[in-house]
Amino acid sequence: MTIILEKQSAQVLGSAYWERLRSLGRPFDTPVDLWVRSSAAWQSEPRSCVVAIVGTRRPTSYGLRFVADFVRELRAADSEAMIVSGGALGVDAWAHESALREGLRTESWVVGPVRDPNPRSHRALFTAIASRADGSAVICPDSLEPVTGETPFKSDWVERNAYLVARAQAVVVPEATERSGTWSSVRWANRLGIPVFALPGPVDCTSSSGTNLMISSGYAHPVGGATKLIEDLVVEGVVASYNDSRGATEKLVAIGELERRLCRSGGLQVVDLPGLSAQLGLKLETLCEYLLSELRSGKLRRVGNGFERRG
Image (cartoon, rainbow, N blue to C red; front, side, top):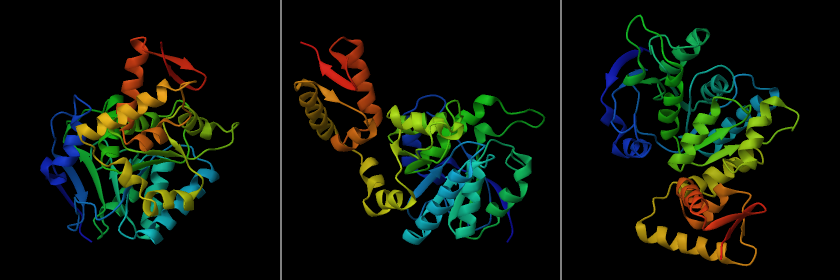
C-alpha cells in the first residue's frame, strides 16, 4: 500500500471538533491544518465509536493484558470502532499494536516531524499504521510540526494530548503513575466533558498509583474489567450520554437539582464526580466549576466527602 504524506485543511475534521477544542482557549481557539501520513484510504470522519487509550511508558503485564482484552472485545462489539493514541512507549504503542492485530482502525497523534516522529524506535509501528487500507493514519497538527533543524518543546506533547483526546468519545487509562504525563490527557478530557475510565490496580504498584488517584479524586470512572467497559461504552451508551450536548434550559434544571441535593440535611456526599455529572446531565467541567465557585464565595463548605450549603 502506498503511503502518502500531505497537508490537510483544518476543516477536514469538521467544525464540531474545532468547536470542542476552542472551549479550551489559546492556543486551541484557531483551527490548524494537519499533516497526515496515511494510505490514500484515510478517512477523517470516524465510522463509529472512538476511544483514546493512553498511559504509562512502563506498563506491567496487568495493564497490557487489559488493553489487549479490551481492544479484542471492542472489535467483537463494534467492528467500526477506532483507537486513538500518541505512539509513545508503553501503553500507547501497545494500544496501536492491539488495534492493528485485531483489525481495528487506529490513529497516532504525534509531535512532528511527522515523517519520522519520536520515538524513533517505533518507525516500523508508524509505518504499519500509515500503510493500512482501513483509514488508519499518523497525524500531526501543523502547529506541532517543527521547523527544520529545531527540536520540539516539552510543552508540545501536552498540547498534542488535547488534540488527541478531542478526537475521542471516551478516554481509557490502563496504568499511569502519580506524575505521569497521562494526567494532561485526563485533565483535557475533563475540561472537554469527555468521560475518562481508569483501571484500578494494586495499591503498592507504581504503575497503578496514578489511575487509583484519578479514581479516588473523581477524575475518572473505575473500570471493572474489559467486558464491563465494553458494556458501558457500546451497550449501555455511556459515551452517548456523556457527550450529549445540553441546552441552557437543561443546564438550569440540572443546577436546580444539584442545589436541592446540597441543601438536604448532611449535604451532598460525593465520591464519584463523573458519575454525579452523568446523573445530573451536566458536563464534568461545568459541575466542577460550579462547586469551586460556590466554595470560593463561601456559599458551600466541605462536609466529609462532599459539600453542604451554608446557612
